[in-house]
Image (tube, rainbow, N blue to C red; front, side, top):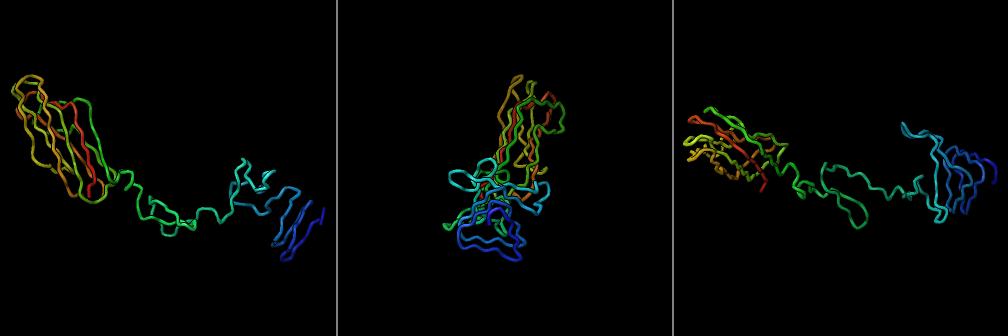
Length: 236
């Protein structure tokens, strides 16, 4: 067996240890039930997947004799690889059974981390003015895809009118629908600022939604908002 090639029509079988110092060419199957010592490079004659090197060298650790990758990482048996889960839902957490098999937990990672489908926030820290009675957006944004359910939505705005005895009118909107009522405040001194806000629990459909803060100067002067924020959280 040393230094010569073996040609197998179907299967070359050995019930004890086998040593190959030369090349071994098998037409079909090589089956060794004992230890196998390879005296030269082992390579694949069938080209693997595209962009792979057709001659794949097998490496092993000189001490443990375990097969390793060319970077020294131990090669595991195929049966120890994590299997694919039929019918798994993208984004769900994978759990393991005591026998090492895995399964789809049915729990989405967003449920644990509070992902974008369960939370939405935006803010504006700059100043915007309006000298007309026509409302304009101070802050507006469209969410990603939100889960359907009851949402707690909080609006805040800090603003006023730069002219004495003039007003600012602020409205909070979801999908162009006014939430609550328009809030109108008259300043008693030049450049006064007031806090305006609204909190509501609302039932939102699944999908994207647009949240906005709009304001105007209903009786002249210069209405201004210096800060605003919108926070939406799924509660049930």
